[in-house]
Image 1 (cartoon, rainbow, N blue to C red):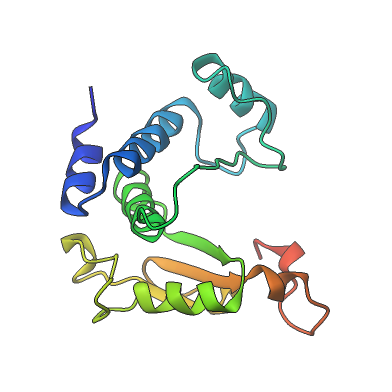
Image 2 (cartoon, rainbow, N blue to C red; image 1 turned 180 degrees about the vertical axis):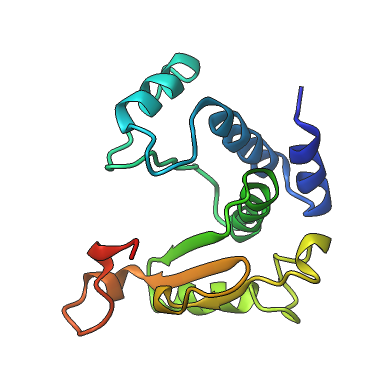
Length: 167
């Protein structure tokens, strides 16, 4: 049975079936582990493997999920649904969005900007409590989306000390 909150978000954001299934999967995982920095990674992995035995490893020092979504299906919309779900059901307010290159980064900025034809944060919850986009050094406000490109993070140019996140 699909959770009513998940169903509501999926319907209001017009998620296609594979995206709605991904949102439901996120919901199921969030019920299995604590969404806290103090959650031991081996414990989280064991809890997830009990329900999803095909999961072998997070490949990171923190729980991480990867969704196999086809091109053009609406990954940006799914990202907006994940943000909405995590904010509404778990009170999470800080999100880091990493783009593979400047082209995708600029597209994401446009898609997360009010007035854009593809605006993905159009839910009523954000009408009066609008998310803001900023660098991680500007983390003051309501729901935050941190944006950067993997090229910037891998470059040697002076900038944020990403390895020191969180501050």
